[in-house]
Amino acid sequence: MTALSILDLVRVTEETDARGALYNARDVAVHAEAWGYRRIWVAEHHNMAGIASAATSVVIGHIAAGTKTIRVGAGGIMLPNHAPYVIAEQFGTLARLFPGRIDLGLGRAPGTDQLTLRALRRTPEAAENFPQDVLEVQAFLAPAGPNQRIRAVPAAGTEVPLWILGSSNFGAMLAGELGLPYAFASHFAPELLIPALQIYRSRFKPSEQLDRPYAMVGVNIIAADSDDEARRLATTQQMSFTNIFRGARGLSQPPIDDIESYWSPAEKKQAMGMLARSIIGSPETVRAGIDALVAETGADELMIVSDVYDHAKRLRSFELIAGAAGIAAR
Image 1 (cartoon, rainbow, N blue to C red):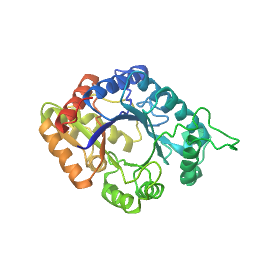
Image 2: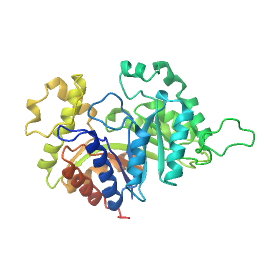
Image 3: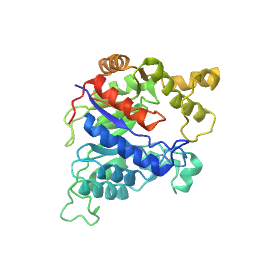
Image 4: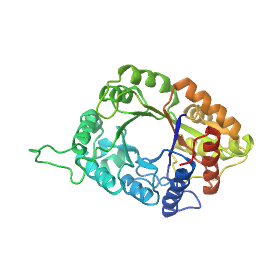
């Protein structure tokens, strides 16, 4: 059975402030734990009014403190924004607080715009050091050597599992070469999904962390009691993607009856291209979509985004998805 996990966007909506978004994320995790989801991740995004997970390690601690068994992690930390030493300290501390439950997914995109990147005191060129930075984080999380002068305290020896995140072939190659699990962001970059997975598996070299390839596929899934209701709920995400192309990122908006009145034909083409692998519908539709995706990709795990505006309906979506996939409750 393919494992299911959740990527929570920690959405700030027109009716919910950042504090509410953070507590909603923890509430999702509590329910997901009971429904059998393996892990819940949050992502690093900066200068986005509609996403409250910029201080990613703090949010992970908040979610982990409200749960007991589900794995909690970063999907991901944008490593070029940080000193590897500091990330090792942060996630090693989380691992001491919540042993055996913390994941560290690493990406090389900035997770923001160029102006905000300057506010982070980083340069675009920092991404060129990504492979070496990954190895540095890994080394600081490993047991410290007897003559090691610089130690990440209390991280040394926690060996927090690392993941490489990607939306292109670069991450697939790196994950394979380093022998790390790979998560592909097909929830917004579906076009390269199959080629990236092929590259990852063909280049994989066993490592101390992993002896065979392990591929996670990100996918947008919105479930409701009927196909029509699910399609209406999906307009929130469709508007969000449209707003990206308009340069008007903002708060999450409630669903609308007629999405065609919101976007132009060109905007629809762009948005639906990025959302091409979305699965939207009743439990029966969702089950068929999941089965087809797993059969096509051979995914070991699905990382699900269910970007539904109303918190209760978002919980219902995740519950229906779990039921449709037949994952066992813990």
